[in-house]
Every structure is written in structure tokens, then in C-alpha cells.
Image (cartoon, rainbow over all chains, first blue to last red):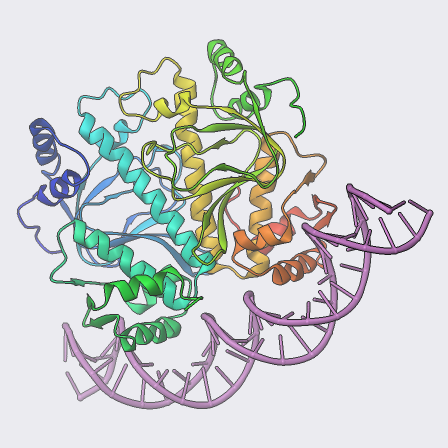
Length: 241
Length: 241
DNA sequence: CGAATCGTTGACGTAAGTCAACTTCAGTGG
DNA sequence: CCACTGAAGTTGACTTACGTCAACGATTCG
């Protein structure tokens, strides 16, 4: 376990700020919430499946993913999570979780339990901006789910890959971790396969294809988008191209 | 256009009742809401993609589906909708819809706009049961999405098909349209393919397989589950709730 | 230095797509 | 009544995208 850096709500505030107007009071409230961060090691299960979703977490740094474990040991990754996201936030706090959340890298979380109440019908809303963010977080997750369904159901391997990369790139940009078109992508080819419904070998070949097409560079866990419009074209309808 | 039967909130109340306790007042409120039903013909677009989701609809009778249209004319079906469902309900009422909703059969809808406000953080909740239902509807949709991701990403054709059939059967049961293990399934093989990410030909072969395995009977749009546990085994489905 | 872990490549097998023909079957109209 | 039509379902022959297996580099790390 790495000792956490000084706890900071900066990333959270930054990510929320781009979506709603936060009052000074709300910023302060967030600062207070992020007082006792927790460090998780890479690969550890942060929220197990089958547990009640009564303890959502801010993701302050590092990457995670939500997944469903199948009875035969395989796993389907449903969604990736970046700094600024909230893990395990659901209206259905008391019902058991179907998914689990797992750390992809060493990561730091903080309790976000207050966000749960914002989702309840009887919520007494002292913080309208935060309540709105809670709803927006759920909405964006749904949009990602729908896009993922489209990827898995209607696209060939190169389009799936390109589409996922673009999704991640856009989110990385928003939370300020993009560095001149490049960003850290701590997802092994095995996990990319678990997300995109393809074998590790085929992930490798598909990435080669994107590389040779001059669309991306990917080396040592750093991904650089070399040709954005090309990548977008590849993501949209690979089949017709 | 079939002339609508006497407008009735019965199906709505029945479906909601199985999930929350409704007050007499809330039942009455639902009755009033369902006063001016509208009939849509099979195949018509009920909510277009790109429009704001500011007008959710009760589905009183018939089937519909939510889909994403791809640039090359193909379409990915995201979710099916049965009587008792709400179409186009989203927290993001003002943002443009990515999906569209289309009638699978002739169907009858009624305005459910009041449910929109139940999802807003500032909602002034006079009807806690209905507000709760609005959340539950969103939650259940998310669970269906996640299961669909698992299907498309991790399962072979027979398991996909079995899993979808089971999902539909469970929902049909809940809204009281199951008839001794059999129900109307007004989904052509083409649409099943659009949902399950497979070609019409392969849908046909997969259904044959399930038939010959003695798991289902499907004739003239009526599906009968002959061997429930066998179907569940085929679906590799441990989620029975 | 082994020992992991991850990435890469080739040979080969298989699930599923494509194309095309042929059935049903429900309308519809002469 | 039958002949015609169009939509849905069914089947066979062939192609292809992707999986599987297995071997082999590259990196990192105790």
C-alpha cells in the first residue's frame, strides 16, 4: 500500500465543474468529503458483486473497471472508470450488485456516500449542483452502456477498438489528463479483450492494424491518437470502409 | 389503426404494484394520467433519435424497442419494451436522445410526462411511490443493459438467444401476459438478429437448435418455454431475480 | 540470474456471416 | 375460386472474422 498523497478533491471538483455550476459551499462540501482517502492496490476488488451498493466511492486517482464475472471464470468488463468518476453509485442502494468493481492500477478512493441520498426521491437537497451531478453521472454511464452495446452487437474488431479508444480519450481530456494527444492507458490487452468481447490475440492484431493505419501509437502503456478523424472514421463504420 | 379499447391504467397499476406500494391516491393519479391514449401502428417511430426526451410514454399495450441507427443503415436494438413499461424516460430530458423508440406491433401509449419531474433533484414529491417507481424503472433498464452487454460480449449464439428469451419471459410473467408457460413473441427473426448481433440466418439456426433441444416451442409468434431449467442452463444464467 | 507478466507472431479450427434458392402463409384482387 | 404478391421463415454451399493453441520476444523485478 502506497501512502496517499495529501488528500485532494481537486480532481473531483474539476470534473464536476465542467458539467454543472458548483456553489462555493458545494466545493467546500466536496473538500470535506474527501478527507479520508483510501488506497487500493492494482487488481484488488473494490466492490464485490453480490454486496449492497450502499457505499459509493470517488475515484481520486488511478483506473478501475466494472465487470460481471461469469460462472465459467470468464469476465465481461462493462465499463472503465477514470479519476473523477464515482464507483458503485446506484439508486438501488439496498439491492445486491450484479457487477463488481476492480482496480486496474493502484488507486485512491474517498467515500461518496452522501451522493446516494441525492438519488433518493425524498432527498432533502441542500446541494442542488451536487444532486444534479449525481444524476448526470448515472446518465453518462447509461450512454456509455448503450454505446458499448452498439460496439459489441454491431461492430467488427477494429471499429470496436477505435470506438473504445475514442471514448476513453474524450473522458481523459475532460478530466485533464490528456497530454498533447497522448495519455496513459493502463489496460492490458487481456483486459481490452474482456471489455470488447474478443481474445487477447485478436486484440493484439487489431491494435497492430490501427497502428499500421497510422491512427494510433501505443507503447509502454502510453496511447497517442495520431489521426483523430481517421480513428473516428474507423470507429463509426468500419464495415463500409 | 385499431380503435383503442377503453383507456385503462390497469396494466400500469398492476406492473407498478408488484414493485412498490401505491397509495389509493397514487392509483387514482395514474388513472387520471392515462385518460388520452394514443395508437401507433406497427413499425412507426414513436420517439425519434436526436429529439429531446421530454415526453415519456406509458406503454399500455403492444411491444416496442429502443434502438440505435447506424450510419450504414443497420440498426442495433438496445432493449425491448412490454406493456407496463415507460418509453423515453430519462433524467436528461433536455439533452438529445441517442436512441430511438419504434413500435414492434400496433400499440397504445399514454403521456407519462409527470414522471420526468420525479427524476429531477428538486422534485417536490407528493407521490413517493410513483417517484420511487420512476427510479426503479431506470434501474431495471440499467440492469437489462448490463445483461445485454454480457450477452453480446461473452456468449455464443444459443446462450444469447436463451438468455434474451428468459429475460422476456420473466417480464411477461410480471405483467401478467404469461399463459401457461406460453406468450406472444411478436419479434421477427430479423429483429431478434438486430438485438443479438447476429444475422437472420443464424437466428433461425439458433432457434432450431433450442427447439430440437426441447427447450422451447415457437410457432406463429407464440413462444412456449418447455424446459425452463434447461433454458437457464443454456443461457449460462445464474441471475434468476 | 530465473520467474513473472505482457506482448507478438504463425498455423489451424470454428462460429457465424453471406448469398441464394425455396418454402410457407396471409392478404389482395381478378 | 385461384393466381399473385410480399413478408417471414428455412435450408444448403461457401466465405470470413475471430478463437485457440503454442511458441517465442520483451520487460520488469525480487
